Length: 308
Image (cartoon, rainbow, N blue to C red; front, top):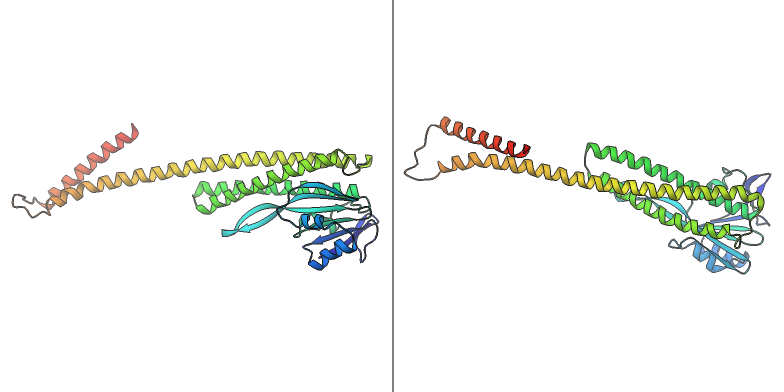
């Protein structure tokens, strides 16, 4: 799907045709739309293909008068057993002398918020500022999802305190995978941002300096939060693995004690079930009392061994 936008009176509005200074948004484009981008807008076909490759990592590439910036953005997916996992998806930003084009496989909150006018001070005619605005929204989107991961892990941890279930452990594992994806993508985005900061790939203006500093701060904060949450969640998983193993040992110990105590009266009564001439069966109450005394003595001995 192709959409055209332009900033008019400091507001991003949808337009019907492509003019100088507009923004073209391509979401999961069809073959005809890809041909339109490459033939009518003269975009490099390799740039468009790279932006639509879900395995593409964050990078910058320049070809003639066009610049491709690929940035990873967060994306939520649901795996088996309704396990929520966050992953990342590349978004390609192609800057030409006249327009800016964004290409991605699926809808993203970052692009949707900018297109709907939710983000203020978006200038499609100022390509550098538009790029920095997108980068800022990407960093903020990572921060929001990192905080959500932290809240989810705390909630699951409280549930695990009450009952050990595989469902909660699988959810924690999904969150741990999400943090790994985030950490890898944020580091790639940071490298891309550093290349932009040098001013050799994209021309930087003095009026964009404050916005540039905000972008840098947000990305560094996201990277730091991702590392902290990943370490905490990894420690939590190890702790619960030890707790589960300890609980299993306790259960096995209790079952062993019960089995041992139950074996004593079984052995006593089995003697009188044998067909032997010299075995004289005493009164039933004598056998029951004797078995009870022996079981009690064995229980006391095992209890003392436990405390020691």
